[in-house]
Length: 225
Image 1 (cartoon, rainbow, N blue to C red):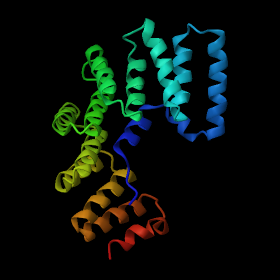
Image 2: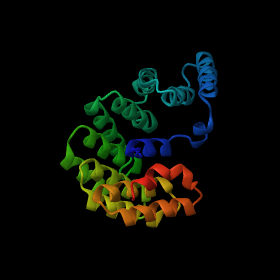
Image 3: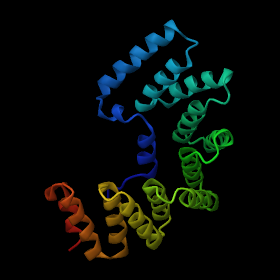
Image 4: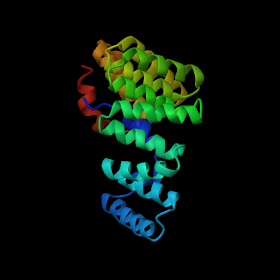
C-alpha cells in the first residue's frame, strides 16, 4: 500500500514550496542558470546554496554535498549548509555524518525544529530506536501544537508496528491539521492493519469530503469490505 514517508513530507516541507510545482526540465534550467551565476561570483555563498538546492531537488546528492562542503570550509557554522548537508548524508546512508551535522545545528540553534526532527529520523534509519524515540518524544513535548511532530512520531511508530500508538498520534495530527489528506490516508493504513475496517472507511469518507474523488480511492475502499 502506498504510504507517506516521514522523511519525504518533512523534507519537502522545509524546502522551497514553489520548486515542487516546477517540471524536471524547469529545475534543470534553473540549476544551469545558478551554475552560470556562481561561476561569475564563486565566493557568493548565497548563490552556492541556491545552486545546491537545485542539486537536491534533482536528487544530485553528491553535487549538493560538494557545494555545502565548500560553504562550510570557510563558514563552519552556516546553519543552512549544515542542515542540508545532513540531509544529503542521510540519502547516502552516511548516518554518523548526518547525525554530527544535525547536532552541530542544534549547538548553534537549540530547539531548532527541523534539526531535532532530522536527528530523530536519522537515528530511526540507523536502527538506534531508543535514541530516535527519545528525540521525537522531546520534539512533541516542545512543540505540542505541531501536526508534523505528531505525524512524524506516528510514522516512526508504524515502522516498528506500534499500531495503537501510531493511530493515536495520527489522530492528534489530524486534530491539528484537519484538512491534511496524507495524515488521513496514513491513519487509514494503520486502521486497516489493526483490522478496524469501519474506522478506516471513515478516514476515506473524510478524504472524499475534502475533495478527493472517490474513484481515486477505489482500491482503498475495497480493503474495507
